[in-house]
Image (cartoon, rainbow, N blue to C red):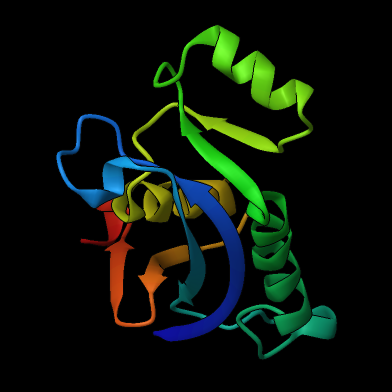
Length: 143
């Protein structure tokens, strides 16, 4: 089995709905996303012969996702009133409304699914919300 990993960082704000601690308030993180791709066999032809995947291709996909999330306010869908969302947008805030609670666990799964949908054989994504704390997600078919 062969595996590659790359990482990218992004800064974003969020809050946790229905959480009774300091994380229920708006705050930010320097997120670090570490993505792993795995395959049993190396490519047999072309410029990527004897590679899992060209690192440039892999890095490009991971960094594109990080860029999309960078300097955004990650908002759980339905957690803010429509008028609040409109006011934030009117003020020029960059919102990323997501259909889940914006925990590190859910962001790891989201990144894994997005990268898989981009055609990468993702085996795991680690999402660090602090330098010492991360959540990991692995696709079910790899467990």
